[in-house]
Length: 159
Image (cartoon, rainbow, N blue to C red; front, top):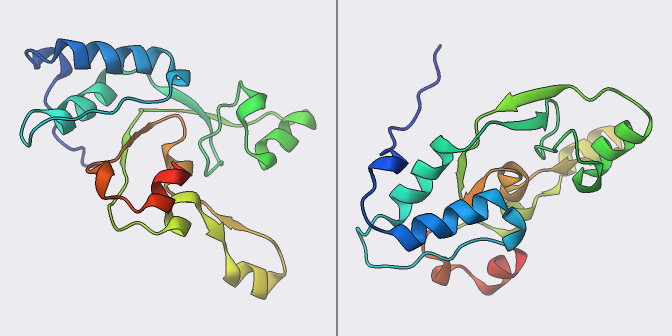
């Protein structure tokens, strides 16, 4: 079975929006900037340019079996499990993946965004297991929030 990829308008074919293109490219180079708020009328190309950006970015290195997409070469930003494995000298399995755009649905609940405790595993097996949320999936990727002004305050605070 082949994976179907969404058809995306090429970044280089987007005419105009030069300040926006510069802003998102700078943010892609240095994610510590903290994100870009894009605003404009419906149909102005906001979603198109973000989706096009993901296609021109390089592949990311992730720990293959980590649901948080941890960078295997940056122990300061690893989840507790990957950091523990790294401290123990374990060779973390590395996988190269395309960067993707992760959409945050407007109706998302807080546990869906940040993750929650897997109650079934806790009851059945007596272990603490985290069910990762959308933010875990968005780690090292692009989080796209359409209509951010319509998000509940507590969800916006989590972001």
